[in-house]
Length: 117
Image (cartoon, rainbow, N blue to C red):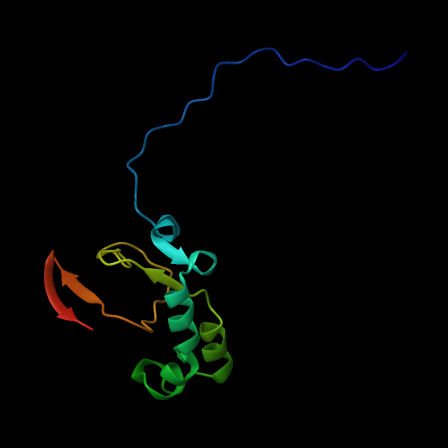
């Protein structure tokens, strides 16, 4: 009396319902250069940036923030972004916090450059 394996009847192929593609924070991850791909110069820069000091002493946004929150941000993922990489898209939901440790950042509103940081 050994049980016989059941075989499912063939069904129609699965189909995706088309929906407009949206650019999300997780998709942007592919645009960044992650630590395992750093060049020698990138490693040097990464080691020289003191994020803890930047957040504790140099950023008004983090005044009064609990030390354990700053510590979590300091140990967050560190990435490099090539010139022209989009970090935050106007009008789109974003769950990432970006802290610029090296280089410059351009800010565009409605397609017009309004500042460099």
